[in-house]
Image (tube, rainbow, N blue to C red; front, side, top):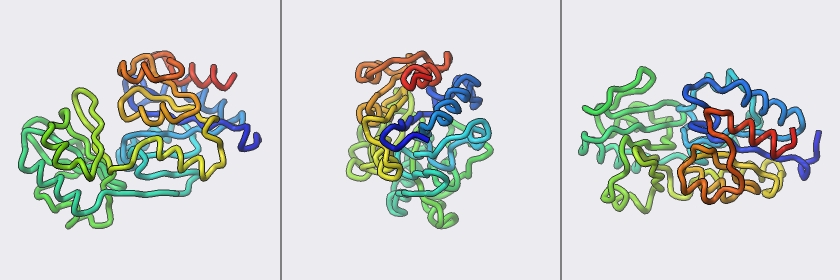
Length: 259
């Protein structure tokens, strides 16, 4: 096994990065991750999805060394939870009140244990989502859950951003937005993993495609953008790999780790 100073830690976004066009991880990506770990390196999922919104099938297909979920809201390393940071009950209720007042938008509250949705005319709830009927439903019915991410089905409007600017960070994706607790991002998640593992910052590789990947791509020793990335992410990357449809994760891992 490599010493900590010799090991690399690879951090992978899920959507439009690790995955192609479904929740099936391409076989080549699975093989590259396995080869990296067999060589003594560590591989982590680093996703904007909350813990409850990561499809279990993902972990049936591949083995990793840990997970950074909810843009740093919850972190697991080696099967141990080393960090959790959920939205306060007051903030969750305030956000729910906003969306009950604006039924023209759909939104999903992504928790540690469950995923919740306010029904709207724009989108029907998925079978795995719990439907909310009043603003205090999460607090009242699921008091032991903590919301890690709020996903909106549109770009967050300016008045929403202004209203909650002191409590949440909004990542815009053009046709939807993710909202996380102020101060949380994927780079902060990496920092906590490095403290736990002893791996150096310069020995990190971060691979992603979207605005919420910016912080980790800028922070990592080697920041990698998928070919299908937003242009502003391509502009800051140290290396641009193939698209998610062409197993860009595998291409980057094999090249950068000499596998």
